[in-house]
Length: 213
Image (cartoon, rainbow, N blue to C red; front, side):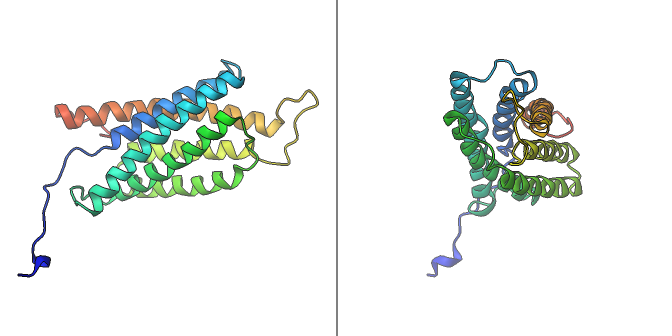
């Protein structure tokens, strides 16, 4: 008897775990965004440590779990068959891992001058997500990746090593503009992620047909 002829086949699942990633990232963005935009509460050692912990466990861990779950469901058990979910698995995993680094750096109060290359890489990943989801007709998720791209373009200007601080020690002109832009896009994209969480959950559990779910 050839054991290769026997395989366990699992039925397709409608319970795609993207809502965990949406909610985790959205919560992180709504914590970071208003603080960057309004500078309230003002940054201090205590504030940075608290925000670092939130960054590691909400956008970090929630997205990583969603990404791993999607990869396993797509490859090992094949309970998901929408090819666009491969992009979602890549994005949730990569963004989740990088949020572990962002949260830890904020907790330790390290500098951001090394982030320029990271921003470039994640702009590319965000544009890739835009291409995949707009091409698939999933424009609400395509809009999400547009917001993500704007976040990393803004963060790039914060990370430029040649933007010297002002004489009073405050950030330079480019860093100030980048921080405002990052705070704005964190907040707007965080609110959109809350909508995607809401719409996807209602569509799956209650038979709604909201866009983005």
